[in-house]
Image 1 (cartoon, one colour):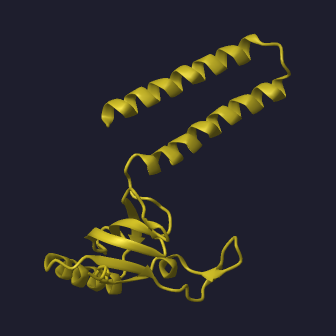
Image 2 (tube, one colour):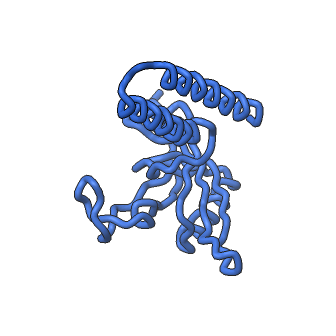
Amino acid sequence: MTLQLILLCGLYVGLSLLVLYLIASSSIPWMLRLGIAVLVTLGYFASWTLWRDMAGWPARAVLPDRFLFHAATIIEPDDEKAEPGVIHVWATELLDEGPDKRPRSYQVPYLKSLHSKIQEAEARMRNGRPQIGHRESVKSGGFTVDGAMRRDEDEQQFNLGDLASPALPEK
């Protein structure tokens, strides 16, 4: 992955130099030149942000409403370092037509209640019972863009339970 980052940075530097050369040698108005430079710079930050989600780092998206739970890593809060703690959940979204093809890692704020739920679910998984997750309904909190009332930690609350056994056809 380090080689890919170096190549990506080299591509960005090369593109920057090309844009800088074209801007410096052109006769377009200076406001348009400045706009092009700002647009290219913003494009770098946007592509970096979008690339992070594709590189296997935990998604900053909200957990799906229904998901197949695979595993989790729990990093407890550290008061000495002023770190809030985080939970990384590895899950596959369950769609109406079946599970999504690829599992994804989600980053969830640390909560003691989630910590205990995940430990219990992992114990059941060790006993051979696959776990399914359901995101809980959103509680009251601040406003969001879509007008719904919610807080960050509330929209990441979820419950885990045993996956129902598949119904077998009759003989």
